[in-house]
Length: 282
Length: 100
Image 1 (tube, chains in turn brown, yellow):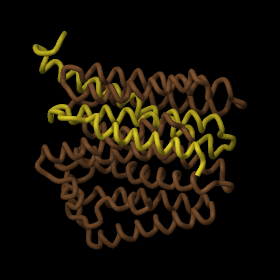
Image 2: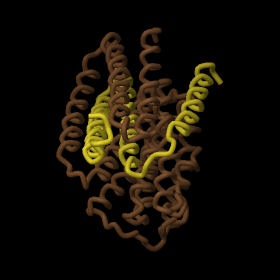
Image 3: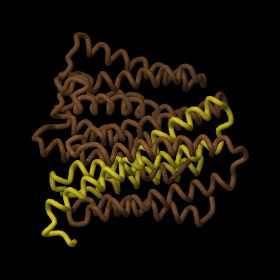
């Protein structure tokens, strides 16, 4: 990587930190968001130029651009059209696709390298797909609850604790299997179990607690993105992901405090194992 | 392990510490916009999608790249636009105090 590229990524990281800081206060919040957006554009342009220079086939960039066009149109349309009352579920939806993208990046790299994958890459990829999988479905359920597509009441189905423990067991066992023998089908099983755990984690929580849950899942996505950074050896992803993971955790606590709730009480809301899923793999 | 892993872990730990410190006393009305702003930042995963797009060589990889690109771009574009829209509303309601 050239010095110019590295300095560009550094400038983007600074923009993210200062942008978040400016968003702490009403007077500077909008400027903070614009600064953060400028950092994002800079980081993406640097990476895109690098891809354009080094690409051997055109298929990758063409497929990438097609996906970008669809995502940009969909994201912009939703962001403009959704009424103000629908903002929290929209943020949750964007968080879901972010977590899904983080998981897919690790899967793509895993499929490409498989079966000659080192332990370091495997561990990062496993953490990425597990956290990303939980976030993807958990955020979709959270958005559904706020939108009224999923009941806002806590869903307390019988045996839910056993189901959650079983899913965690599948994730852990699958992760160990993948670590010992690099293996794409078992990785898919791990992802499916993590995704099912995301559903089982959010369903028992009441609709009123959803903002706290969305904030926590937002922090999860940040962590998943940082893990994707370890998979791809990308410092920009590691810094931005870790930044969101940590600041999102603090924000989750602030939001819970503002509602006179503890994060643990929110997560337990009729549910025994809390957020042990992602942690259990680490 | 390798020197590059050590550098990566160093960056990770320092960024976590910065993340803990960068959020201070936030008024409750800014909680949702701030969450949305942080949400947009993790859209940087699009950068990771660009990287894997460059090395993809099989139809399966191309399909995964296309879906990931759509997801990540929706996160970035939608995230920043919706945060700006929320803050715009905030500014209007609080307009007399803020600079025009």
